[in-house]
Amino acid sequence: MTAESPELPLAAAFPDADREQWQRLVEGVLRKSGVTEASGAAAEDALATDLQDGIRIRPLYTAEDGAAAPGHPGFPPYVRAGRPEGTTVAGWDVRQRHVHTDPRQANEAVLADLENGVSSVWLTVGDGGVPVSGLEQALQGVYLDLAAVVLDAGADFAAAAEELLRLYTASGAPLSEAAGCLGADPLGLLARTGDDAKLRLQLESAARLAERCTTEAPGLRALAVDALPYHEAGGSAAEELGTSLATGVGYLRQLTGAGLGIDDACRQLEFRYAATADQFLTIAKLRAARRLWARVAEVCGASPAAAAQRQHAVTSTVMMTRRDPWVNMLRTTVAGLSAGVGGAEAVTVLPFDAALGLPDAFARRIARNTQSVLLEESHLSKVIDPAGGSWYVESLTDELARAAWAWFQEIEGTGGQAAALRSGMIAGRLAETWQRRTDDLARRREPITGVSEFPHLAEPPVHREPAPAPIGGGLPRVRRDDAYERLRSRSDAHLAASGARPKVFLAALGPVASHTARLAFAANLFQAGGIETVQEPGPVDAESVAEAFARSGARTACLCASDAVYGEQAAAVAPALKSAGAVRVHLAGKPGERREEFTAAGVDSFVFAGCDAVGVLSSALDVMEVA
Image (cartoon, rainbow, N blue to C red; front, top):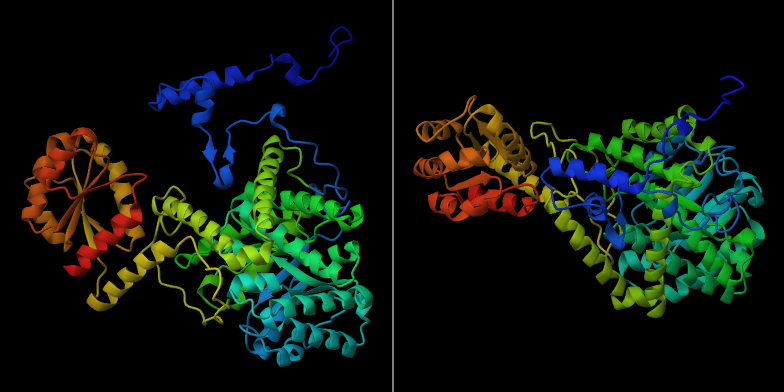
């Protein structure tokens, strides 16, 4: 640059682009894909994505879409972080979960984790975990003044807490240096079991623990506000947040009623949320949770310093699959990253085989190393709120917070969390949400890699030692792969009984270019139900299809070709397959105006993107099993 041409930013050499210009470019792309009627705002809207909770994700965000100022890290409304330094000083707390019932096995796993990167222990105690009497052995060799311990003891929380406090005293470590959470969660227990017979006594017991922690062990939190029961019952992000707020308010009422000040009561709560592979939704959820709780604390009269929410994020069990569990490593990596970026103070990455039983040593190693890579190699904790300032993230945080607050108000309007659980209001709302999501899963609008998309039927199953059965009786526990797992189990049973999996013959018609896309689609679809696909090396026609079908050993068939080829050959090939013994003939693609013609020729069903894949596959297995 010369004196006559002062240095300018590179962008200054280009004219500013406006939204209308971008929309016109979108129109051009849509026209190429066959969408000709969308223009202007309608073109932009065509690329939008609908999420749960009435949230709509737009394809473009600008400064005009920014939400209210999120504040500064460590200050109300705490959107950006619960502490001014975030997790930049020492990283977040790497917390590993242990569900062994044998204290000796639990101790071996705990020590291995603590020696290899884990900083705190989340231990299941009582029903479904180590017995309270075995807690000492499970924690043998653990330096309680260095490693925080978090208990998950269900109805045994009071006895487990007393035993842990005794162990602190016996170790010689002062209670004032103890850290962790005693895990009292009577309302979460009500959600899990549906049993409120002892709820009042449990709330009183939790309040006594909170009083003791306040006076003797300020580094310990007595209560866990666990939102996982609602996520694991199929709830949306906003529903998870709203129920956590209602639970937290219920505990504040109990604690302040027992004599604790509002600041001390707030400091006795640790909130637990699910982290999913939906990266931005998880980030926004954790940021919105801090904003919402800060508002609750403010209304309750808490000081700004006590209004920061302590968060523990756990990778979702709903997203974990039992088939092709190796893909779970990718899911938990994204979820763990999202939890860290979202500002959680503690993160638990579940082992990739957690859905199959007790995780083995390799799976636990991968889980803790996932966090080690994020912290030590990616330096993810070195930036406070890295997603902050993104117009998309800020807008999503705001929309999610508003939806969650509306749900929280509904719960409070029925009398609070306990009343809403007793009445079935929460269960009904979550069931409706899950039913809508189940339909998306069945139609593969929400794909599951390795299960509903790109399944590998020949992959040997992964077996693990059975894990203790979780407590139940209340809200259900769901998984995304439930429907497909039932289909695959039927295929496994067919394999065990007959020595072969159910088969479908893929009849490729016409030139390769005309049938490749639908051939791949059909193969992917049927294999998702555990149905093996068989095809000839080359295309077939009405004269050769009967012999090819007989060689396949299948009982059903699916035509695969372009619409033009269907018009030329489907009416002849379908009856040829029926004559050769096919009990059902499918056609890959939407029938359009030729439905009646194809149906009359012998086509029994049509499979296409967006069809009810679970229904199609279940019906196909019915025919194969009967045959």
